[in-house]
Image (cartoon, rainbow over all chains, first blue to last red; front, top):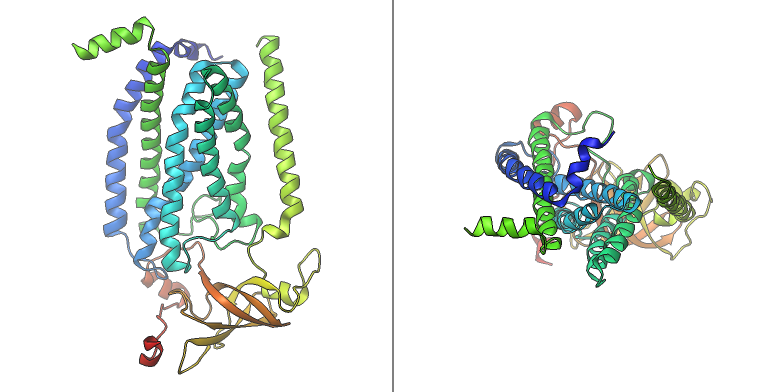
Length: 247
Length: 160
């Protein structure tokens, strides 16, 4: 079934593929983010309740969605790495962790900046905010665990276990606003109902969500390629690559 | 799939399932403690499942809608009192401080303070809670008849 995947378990092929993905996706991501952000910040109408402050949604929501999306990806990759013992996938987990952490920090920071004028506080310990903060610690934990072992195989395994275990937190973040009373409001677009946002506010938001996804794909391919080259530094294909780039 | 991989798949899946079940049990057990606030009906009738009512003097948070026409401001200082309701029961909140921009009648808010008597709370913090709906002002006015009016302060109040 997965025969077509097998060649990419070979680091050299995986490296070439992720380089290609990066080169292809990064211009698309830039385009989406420029269009979405300019449209959202300059042309979308102001909100009836929150005025101009609501424009933070164009960064807060995409960052938050993909902080969870990145974690799910990382967890699934970690799961496969543990079951099939594929070293390449462990590197993918490590490639994603810091990018996910940055997305989480971005979501928390924009949320705080938005919370101050609207709610009246930078931070509250409600279920949504707290579970998102735990997500940040999980990312940092995965990253730290990997580098706390001298033997990279052991480190990779430990990091994968934490990545898999932490997946439990993702549905908790998403449903926290439904399961408990929270200061944070419920979902605007990530629900089965019609989105509760006017159409001309929604479009730039969707473009930015796609933009953040593409940015995540591009950056993690880039980091993945680098991690591959680093871990295989003594191999012939890396030497060849270095010579080619130098000449 | 070879037997060793199958075994690992089973092992990792079982660990993950067990962990998910444990988390679910812990969260169910903690249930109401994770709630960020009481609703007015919970303060008056007790929590839905346990029926526990907060005690007078207890520090708590309350979340509800500001009842229309219930906001009374002092002319000389920032003291303000207003009623909160959700499905019927009404709790009065007294607060001395600056209200958030989104505060107005009909708005959802969360106040933190002490229970003075069964239906009154002396708050030291008032936060505005907004819903998940976003729309331009014209649409909001046409659909809901909502017009955002900022609270007005007298010169004397601002001087404080």
